[in-house]
Image (cartoon, helix red, strand yellow):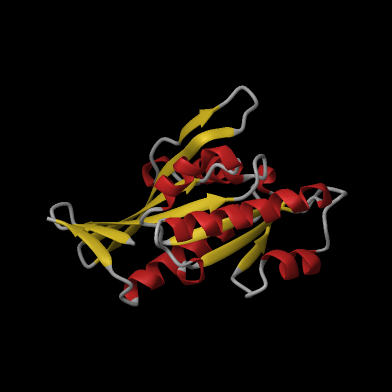
Length: 201
């Protein structure tokens, strides 16, 4: 749910990237921060473990633009993919506007993708959200690797309802900004259609 601050005349939209560990979620946020002009984003906050997997979350604030005297800001988060970070995932998912599923295209990661998909659906239900009502963007990452699965198989397996999707090579910046633009568009459209915004006085 978008949040509107009447004092600052700012609307904040929340987009969360989820998927298996080491699938490319953090890379997406880093590429966004490197691509956008400095005045369009804040500092990226990342907490890593020794193995470089995200322990709790990554966070990146992005300024989308202004209209009718109101500014719109995106809060981009990554959701930890490991089972034992359930509490962190649920906290991040509260107030969600759009979910981005970063699928690792490698055949060896099929089970990890499936586990992530199941985890996120269960977490959403546990915090009172219907997964079917959350706008979704699917990013098929690592399309440059030799052991990548055919896109048709991945679409059928992980995007059966044909949500907007993009192929990506996140480490080279390919498909990252396309994914963000699609997710931001869905978030703004959801707000415009009156899904409701929590307002602060």
